[in-house]
Length: 195
Image (cartoon, rainbow, N blue to C red):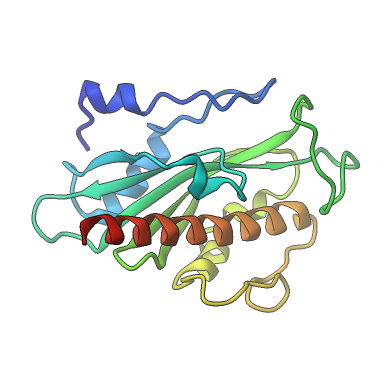
């Protein structure tokens, strides 16, 4: 995978969350997943600039990218890299809001999408929480494959729950649904601007 200096500059991101490191968009584990998914070591990512109007009803702590490859190596066309916040044991409930200034646990993950905004792969690459690491298992994450936002995913029905990882399971499930919805809005807006 070749990342040129201009791309690296574009990938610098300040999450604005106190007590947390910034999202590493060039994480080695993520780059390995990308290279394998697109079958092209020269694949390039270009950040998609999103208007505030697109994301005004959503919380977004990451970035979307267009994926370009040489030839037709892959059907992966978009990627989202972001962060899901979770809580320390006893620190909050699933439905509770986390104050912005709190020092909480988190994990960084990526979603690979095809050209019609359907999830092809989800992968957790930086798990910084003391509980719930079971959600990093590739077998469990495969449940998100094929999700296109047509219906809501429910934990316990479409998505298997994991004892001891409840907050992480709900967190990533909600986040994947929101990020699919945002990408669909982005793609619709792009289609309108091309007409």
